[in-house]
Image 1: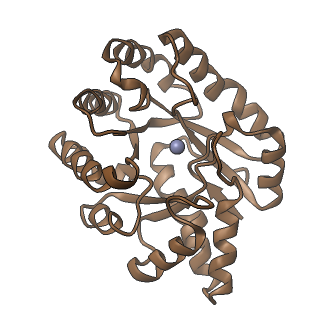
Image 2 (image 1 turned 180 degrees about the vertical axis):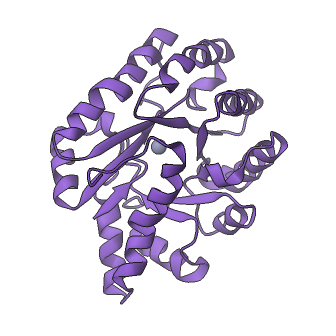
Length: 267
Ligand SMILES: [Zn+2]
């Protein structure tokens, strides 16, 4: 049994829902992100938010998977500040939706000034509406600097770190995130970011408190079964079932339940 707390099902097929259910998935959360192309208007985001709040929950339910979502304009498209602010203005009407857990995945991509400004405006929106936050951290050489900028901005805004998940952590950022009281997510990819093996190493070094794993499955090379594959890796290394359940079920359940809306198909 597991929860995949970060997977972009809008870009996956219905067969993937079936395979995930067969592997023991009982709940997912799907943050808003870049669609693989830049949208030309806020109306494109309006339709996307309807997909995330209306259509995907029904598709998931057919396989006994409880579906939840997070809303935002991703940093890549936030470079256009006019568009970003229009999108920010339509988010509040969706926040009351029964499967909406908060604002995400927000963060930085190239660590630009515009991205940071729109990031801060998302944080304000989350504070105004008492929403939890899911953070995207940049890739490769921009990751460490971007993670520090993001954590500083969250602390300056007075956000409770216990209600923020910082995703895509790797060996060089995980300690920073945990030490400052935030939750950390490891994204398991077949090649880039964390592989299931690297994630297992990180658990062995940094422990299992306030940390989870997710597949971040999307339209690119990625694996919607990455979480159960990491469970297998941990089993092969001799970890106890209790430990495996902590990182793949109990931790996401504890964090996400703070929203008051999270449920699994066991509920
Ligand atoms: Zn993502």
